[in-house]
Image (tube, rainbow, N blue to C red; front, side, top):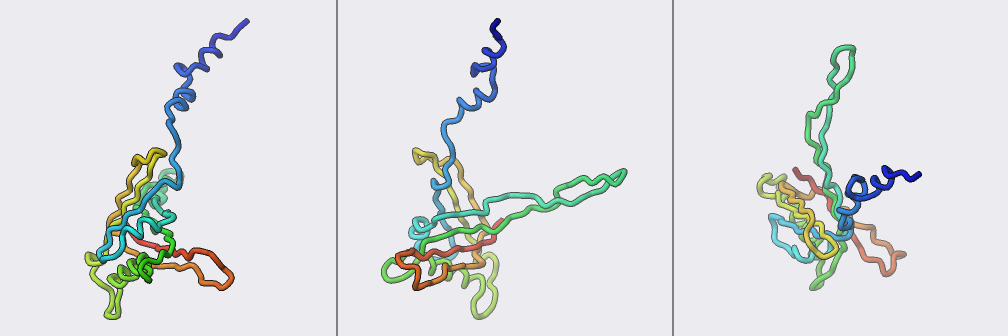
Amino acid sequence: MSNSFAADSMSTGSNPLARMKSSISGYAKTNKFSVTLAPPVGGDIQAATLACTSVSGLMYAFGTMDIRYANNIPLKLPNDEIYPDLVMSFNNVITGGGLPVLDLFESWMKLVKDSSGFGFYDDYVGGVTIQQYDEAGGVIKTYNITNYYPHAIVPEALSWGSENTIQAFQVLGTWF
């Protein structure tokens, strides 16, 4: 005795999982991305785009608070938006005898605070655009981050024992 229900459920027409699997054309890859900066200072933006090796912190979340109702049962309600630091890693490329990407971020941070104190917010915020690509190079997702500024540069340690290692650094930035 054959089970016609089992045979029917395996076809893509009536099996939601099979329909979903057949609609997938690929998977987003973590190494298919670009970062383009829009800083309020001049600098080698193309070098920064090429030197960026990773980016994280593209999270959007809500803070919650407990509201207690009858019988002291808590209900979590959203009460605040959370924007974690955007962390970008860069290889410390050398062009023309200098370090243009590192120089760009150091100049940007001097707009935030120089020897005379902290600057005006509108003078030091910029933007970051992050794009993810599919296998063919088409854009599948774009993140436009506004009101961004770097607040820390974390260089990789210099070491005599690290021969033939490319120096990298991370930039931590605030955004919303």
